[in-house]
Image 1 (cartoon, rainbow, N blue to C red):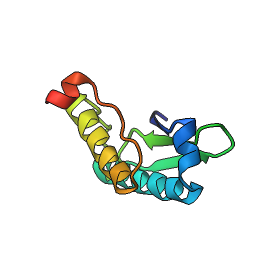
Image 2 (image 1 turned 90 degrees about the horizontal axis):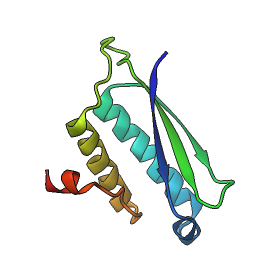
Image 3 (image 1 turned 90 degrees about the vertical axis):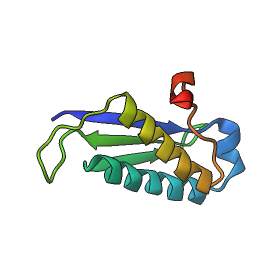
Image 4 (image 1 turned 180 degrees about the vertical axis):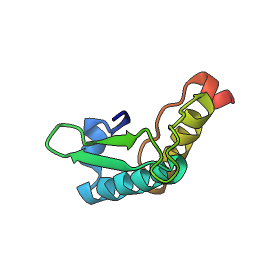
Length: 105
């Protein structure tokens, strides 16, 4: 089985700034957004026992309803980052940094 891994991590300072529940809600919303964007199954684990709260997302690389392989190219990766940032903004959390090319596209 092949998969893609996404890690969403916050700084120690930001991890201390908000209640854990805020991050848990944001992590869940990000998972739902990944499913909606990819059509793939997603499992995730949240680590609250470190200096910085973070989540690991494991994305099945095969769409369960079509059997098609997930294609993550530049455009789909950029859209995924922008959509994750939209979720993070909703919770007033720091966005994912985009590359200069991603900002200009």
